[in-house]
Every structure is written in C-alpha cells, then in structure tokens.
Image (tube, rainbow, N blue to C red; front, side):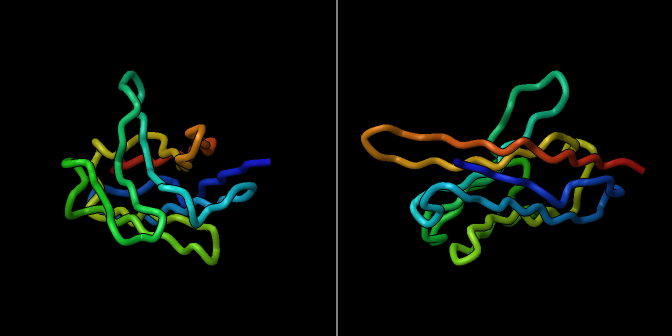
Length: 119
C-alpha cells in the first residue's frame, strides 16, 4: 500500500528555518515527480516546489524562490524541503505529493505537516 509521511513541521520565529522530510513506500519512488504543496486556512492549495524523478530539474513558486530548496534521495525514498527566511505568509499545512505518469496518471498524497511562523 502507498504511504507518504511528512515530518519536520513545527513552530518557528520569523526569519528562521525548517527542513521538511517526506518518506515514501509502496510505489517506485525513483520514477515519480515529487512536489510540495501547502494550504493556509481559507486559501486554496498551492504548489510550492517540484523536482523531477532524477533530481535534475526543479521548479518553485515565485513566493519562495531564493528561500526554499527542494531535493531528493532516491536511495532513501525521501524528498526534502529546506525552508529559509520564513515569514508569516509561509504558515500553512504542507503536503507531499508523488505523481507517476503512465497509462493511468497516479497522484499520491501525504497527510500533511503543520508549519507555523510566529513570534
């Protein structure tokens, strides 16, 4: 069975840093495009960052460019999101997503981890 488990969230002061991790099982991780999404109260879910299956290319939302870094370790079935210079607008639940493109496109989601930026 497919499982994505996020960790690393918590409370941090403005200007601080956090690193989120997502460990995956139940599918071929090295074939999947991995992404981080976030959703704040009363707002739509938005894409934060994405990384190709090999890790050769990445994409970021304009709001996090220069502050966040997405990376992956296919040997450990893990994707990371390093978040720096955090501000209150980064407060949200962060979700890990895996996308597998084939005859049927599959999307898998984690349960989410809360990130709160507050003084």
